[in-house]
Image (cartoon, rainbow, N blue to C red; front, side, top):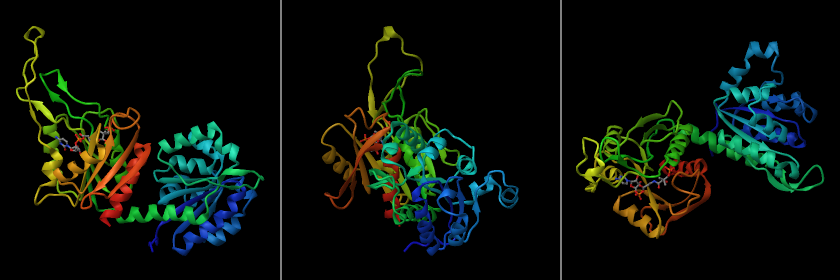
Length: 401
Ligand code: PMT
């Protein structure tokens, strides 16, 4: 049983028939001693009363952006900072649309816009509204902002129709948030290191060998780790990506630099090697630009294998070493042999022969191979790299706990 004492939820209730289910959701959280403050939108008050919400939540109900009394007690910015997590349940198609536009026309949307906390949305609407392309587009925007969507589910609707659009049950909403909050607490002091992106191996001062890695997969893993409370260091080859300020980002260019910086950032508890490090470097890098007339013969030698070195380090080996395997064929076979030869705890294999996943795509599809049991593997089907990262981090948390 997870302990949620001292956790704080800002619960926003929008107008819809399923607003009545929020009372049950509040009850589940209160049983676990979660502190709850609530915002009711104008239309939510057509379905449930502030009195019933405040009686159950034993916390303040807010409803007005321009209330002097509320602003004196806790202004809307402080309210957005107060919570560990913001839950909007039910969230209507209208509010989804407003949030995707960055609207701040009422208290609920203003608080969400001002928040730096994880936002969960539990949609509820008619099946046609749910299936409408505009709702889908708006949700994609919100997912890109990092909002997590719970449900909806398929079922009979209040309007008499049947289909997807029914709000998830309170127990399901409770479980998702409970999971998130308990993980948040556990991982505060765990250190994680991620390598990402390509490396450049110079031929002469202006030319180099590199590869198509964009760094997206590694950056998303670093973000997920950071969001779950890991003390995260990201060592990145050259990319155009941005990352949150409180992730310790160290930019490098060559494999040699990546190796040095990785060593300097040990010890760490977890290390994830998603960088596409160039396997070869120039044996005799030229100090002057090579002239066309001189012709070009590349004399290559092997680069240090950073993963292999760290995973075999006696005193500094992280507790959990995770490698990636980028393969164009015999995915499982090559991944398991890298798992063993590079002494990893897990290896995450991706098929880089497919254009829609892997290198420089927003999507990936991976198989995680676990050490110790050659048949123990888990496939994560094709989804956004941000979602793949979340699932990888879920497993990391389960492992280190
Ligand atoms: O960056 P993106 O565009 O988002 O693409 C993501 C990705 C496809 C690059 C990523 O998911 C991935 O597969 N990364 C590993 C790429 C790779 O170099 O794989 P590999 O099979 O050649 O290497 C195996 C492992 O050894 C990797 O963990 C790699 O980081 C590590 N390695 C390899 C060579 C080397 N000199 N040092 C290393 O640490």
